[in-house]
Image (cartoon, rainbow, N blue to C red; front, top):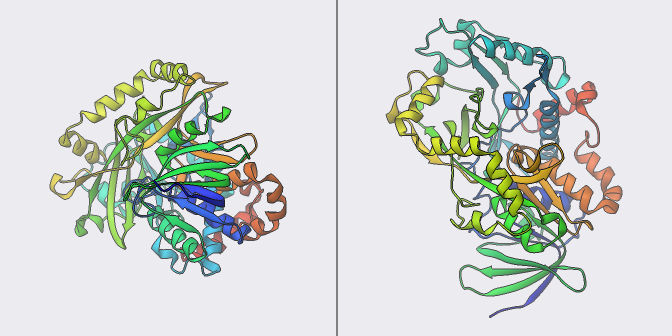
Length: 493
């Protein structure tokens, strides 16, 4: 058994978009910092970040109606939409910096301009969409959004969706031309190529089995080589656990107080994919519908134009499912092993509270292919079964924790950063909006874990991300400038 101890400054666990982003930020801010990355698969960006495993829309709240909620008085709350949009703008600025400094040469390999649209049917939903449109367009972040309930105009916006549709049924949509399609799998690989060129050691087929605190206060990471079975130990001053659904079990191994009373609920998904050119060419947009009453936020149906490996395809979904695995490549024992004495009550409380979600997931699992086609035909009336096939998406592990507002065992649908009190270890849990807000989330990790260094790094951060520390919603001129600048650099014009 090889048990050599390798020392380094930073260890990143998982070679996905989060570790790639954190590594890229650290290399910009502290070029001399020694970083090691351990990934259990054979290449980067191949689990949750893979382009076939995530929606990859570039979540910016331009079309996702679940980021805007209707209040009891009928008004629409747009606070979350503003927050998500601002966070996506932070990602755009950092990517733009990497392109302008030559670290990424061809932005079109991972990002393209594509209209984002919201689509509703029925008078009540149309009324909501009108109010949403009015509330959003008062804000600079959403200027340029259009609204229409005219079938002839909608035929121009999304011909495939209108083809064969009964226009007697009320229908309406909003459109924003400045939306994007982001291929996070490709972006992850581009970032890791650059990191490796800059001396970051990335080890593949290396599975982290344990994490423990040493007597000296460092973190020791026990790693198994999946190809030869050898075990090695590495120590670092700072560890980031960015292993997607696999982060929770590793966080639990740290035994830090912050890891207690936290559970995870895995949700799997399926997408329907069409690559037939004559169908694909009739749709050029990301069109989001409204989740059915009682359905969870991750179930919002959408028909997306995607560019993967330079080829255009249409994805429709998601259809939720259940698997006890925490990763697509995980074990069926993952969920059961994650239940510990310190989170048992939290998990049981969630089980009682989320009976409707459990019922929904069972219904989704039992859907026949024809039932899925019926759901697709609500979007694409003339869709033919032979033109579409099923793709299994990645696993998502929703965080379960005790909260002040929700009480014990509350299911969280966002992204959570868990850090130790001394900031020496951090883990990323949760799902959407995830990848789209990676830069904002990793800056949050740096602020929590390197507070003293951040004071020194702040001028450089502001150089890379001009809106850092500022609300773009409150600074319309700055928003217009950074949005135009990033569009130019990322070739989104």
